[in-house]
Image 1 (spheres, rainbow, N blue to C red):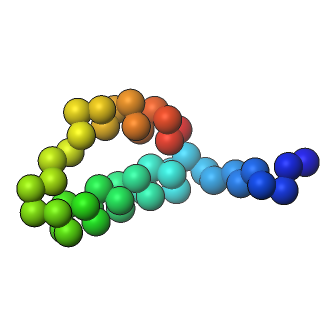
Image 2: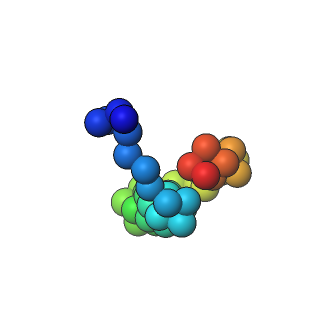
Image 3: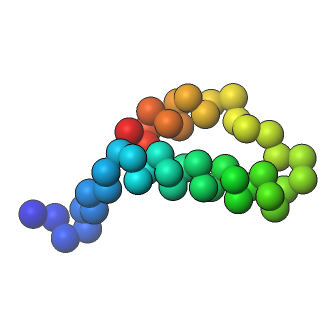
Length: 45
């Protein structure tokens, strides 16, 4: 057992990623959703 390993359900990871994007949209006026969003979502799965 690795004490540094954290298991987070896929739904929570997706929610976290969505929250980050909302945060950036709110705080960076010309922020655009990255073209690589699909790849980022696959990594978070």
